[in-house]
Image 1 (cartoon, rainbow, N blue to C red):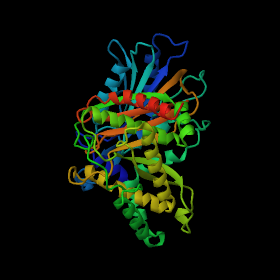
Image 2 (tube, helix red, strand yellow; image 1 turned 90 degrees about the vertical axis):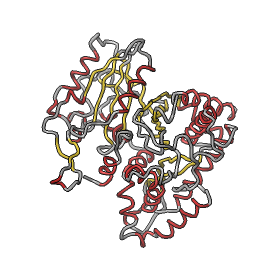
Image 3 (spheres, one colour; image 1 turned 45 degrees about the vertical axis):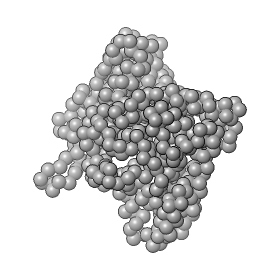
Image 4 (cartoon, rainbow, N blue to C red; image 1 turned 120 degrees about the horizontal axis):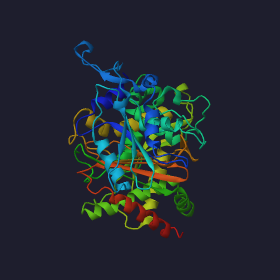
Length: 469
């Protein structure tokens, strides 16, 4: 088992399940009969002997393995344990759907079985069908899981007899998924930072890569409270406490064109606008709870960028992956000032990374995250202070309309992992002209989390007004 997978498994506890998830919403095709969802379920559970190897393995350790973790195949695999058919209670609103996903996301996966589940959900009053999936981060990161789901969809609304994501025949050779943007590579690369980056960057190539100078440069920026891969000035907030096992999930989407218009009017990127929306919504939420700190909150933001060319074979330009510790402007009352603060912070962070090679970027990002990652893994919560207050990821998804067995995908929302010391995670993904926000938090530590959706809606309107739109 590779070190990152083992780290995610060892960091898991009752209060801290380490799985990622996704919620997809589908509109039934016009020719769908009354048993459409039951037929989808039967299709998804047929061919239990044709499951991809990834979905057959579970962790194993014993005295014989000297306590080390290994993957081994489940010899008694039961597809109907992993794929389930659910129905919502009346009145079948989105509220009931999100409540069900919150409960499903709260429970740990059984190590005695392969670490994944999928739930087909009917009962929405408007007739739509939902699918909630979860898979352990030790098996796959959230970005890869999302792209695996995408690979099983089709742009053809008339295509039928399509396999589920876990079936071998789901990966059709004729399918050509859209090329990945740098941010996707960034998010995937960050999933492996705890082990691989530090081992590579601080190993035998350290002197040649100029690591000492890069580390001093990064540390000095952190001490001066300048944006880089490292933060030493994140304030303590109500989000940064130990969490319970219960989760709450909230989701909504907004047209990307609204964000693009704000960006065009202010010289900002769409990602800047997303971060400013989050900063404004969090500011309002914290004021409502009388818990707003004087210093701005810091978010870890995965990014991709073109690193400077290096003479090293392992660092020949290309898309480098890393993380910026971005200040969210929560200390600014004016939405225009918040957006400018976010814009400057992100620009400063990217500029700081552009002076480094890809190896250095990966290493500095790993070092910057080390306190947040080591705390849960080594059970040192409360001893090691988190370098940031939350994670905000923005991952591009399909730009065009997709279908599954004729059902039109109309919503795509990620669920992520709150951890001890970091009770809120915001992950966004674009799809077919909309930006879907998925907010996952500890139910007790982040009460009434769904209020953040209202504040996000208020904030995008406030940014439009400030931009003169």
